[in-house]
Image (cartoon, rainbow, N blue to C red):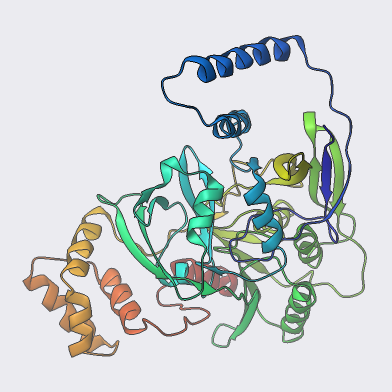
Length: 461
């Protein structure tokens, strides 16, 4: 059997299965010949052959031989314990190729399999998933009435995709929630604006929101924004990488380089048995932002290239990292074309911060851990009742607007029904309900405790 290896057409990058991004299939070229089987392989291949023969000979129902064999292949890959390595059958390989050439209707959600569950890495800005309130670490336990524990990652992704305008129902299990949450979404053509920025005038701070490390012009635009901020003599720059699932490796390297002195390590790449493959270093160039203070915001939805940028600037003490522990996705997958029009994705490399720490499975620990505004367990229980009884929706219909007057009135309304909520949660849900269906602002200082801390750090330094 001849094996082929996929090489990327353009830049070396971290492969990250974006549900909303364009996937690129590269050129195939002959890979090494298959090695001879070891003694233990020969032994258990014989066992497998005997098991298959017995199933075919004596099992009570006629077996589907193809299903059995594909199940065995998937089982072999899953046994290595890596949720990012997988087998693609003929149909899945064809879909993979088609996705690289066109658009699709989706939800804007990045998922993986972890500990036997379909786990949300992050929702993507301005997508159905983000607007529905899906959060990192949510477990998707059901899609359109079908339990995900019986679906592969590929099957789950396929079910979430579909024609633009069609609806999908999912059940989500969230940490701290007593019962699963039912969410209905409508698929959209996912178009992502990777980079946004704003000047926070009162504090004299530059703010950059980077949703993914993708797009041909993203690096140049990022550099332009940063250098413009430095020319304005801002007190600091905040780079928001929350809910950013990653993207191109070279994007992360070039963005890190902008803030670092010449010849400093940014990220190192190691392959099988820990063999060092490459070390990416900062370069000498005329325009850099070496003096402006920097804060990077991360959370559990920050992964891959986000962790490379955050890790590089943290290790060189070039930025303060604020927020929550990142996801921990520091590996790259390569795709190999094998026989019968199938493919296999295998993790072949891992990435390490300048201090030599592996990102994979661990993530980046913030310098300042700050939790977002969120309800406690009792408040979640009351919120569930408030939502199910349409108390919030009915209140906003009768009392539209977000003001001190409506905040006070809503507190009184829910208190009479025996649903006490803290002031910050009342403000959070009332503001969200009043802005439902509107485009979310780039930032909201009032409701963003992590951004508040970043501003405090930069204005007090």
